[in-house]
View 1 (cartoon, rainbow, N blue to C red):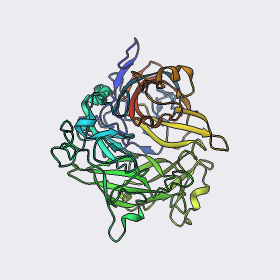
View 2: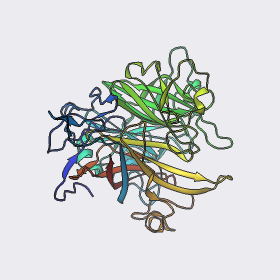
View 3: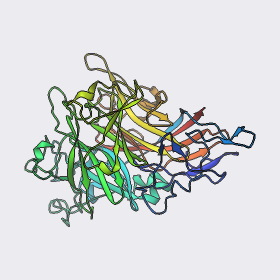
View 4: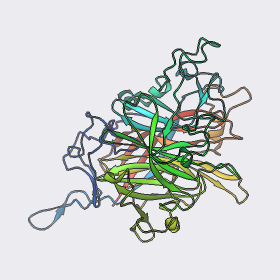
Length: 500
């Protein structure tokens, strides 16, 4: 599905500057033009992921999201009309591989995390390119032997070579490594010498004068500095040399697991161990500064602002948009939430605690948990992906699917959601639901108790640009399976049509 190149199109491989948190740089080999921009929000090149990425000042634009028509001496205009929307259509998807376990949770894959990192299960996998590595921030992680049994569930960080991942995301199938502790050999080696090392659990440092318990509600004893079950990373962003991570925590479990607080942390150099400095609270379900809309986060830098698409009550709400200046990332000053009903930005300064909760969502009003996205900078296309799980009044799931939306600007209009995977589709269940003998081959989950969630597109899409501006995007993404507890790699092909 990658590097398709029919006649009359340009094949573009997005460079490493595209990440879960940064704009993608496309570099078409035909045509001239200036860098693309959003209305009122030109794309900044600050925080580009590596020196090999093309800066936006040098990128070629085929279509622009602003009124970029040119005037001749007689007053007529020329050039392409402005793109005001993008309409996606899913052409296909394919399964690539299982990252952690094979037929069952005790069975290693080609990555052999069981023996190389003493790790048998995890979820999430939020991608971020930092220097020459594609990092994946995983959620609740289980040890294979001796360490971190189910119910303790610290978080972990994996990595692969960014260049290899850009050329073929399949490197995640056999080249995934994890950050490790200093123990060499593993603490489990005495009972099982085949286990070489142990994955390193993410830890937190409280802000000066504050307690870790203000941020972490469930930690594995006796480690109050380690986020435990359902206390996980939700987003990641690189700004210059700094790496920031968003977390959901203060989890309650009655009547259902519910993350009640989000917070921002900074991962300081040398970044050999996942030790994070908590910076500040970000939002909260009750009395949150952002109205409880931002417990999960997909952050992106545009010009001199950080924009965040977020969700609130996990799987029981929709998607909202906020922003703040890059310079204020550690203070939260000058933040604003977008109100799609009026098309205006509402300042958080002076708002009553929780007072912004009445602002309607940007899209969806139910069923969304984690979300991820990419920005095709040269074409001016935002793509978001997420699981949408809808429930009847009693809580029974009545619809569960992986969906995708596109837009020319974050404020919208956003396209209708298009289905990438319908988990009730007989073709999906026949191929991917596990049988009595475990999860063989392309079988990935026990469908009677689990579905795909935590959908995160990787920063390595291949873009084919047609003469009429239509894009065909080959986009790899990770998804979690819950039962068995695993992360898998898919790829989808999407046709995206410009609207004028």
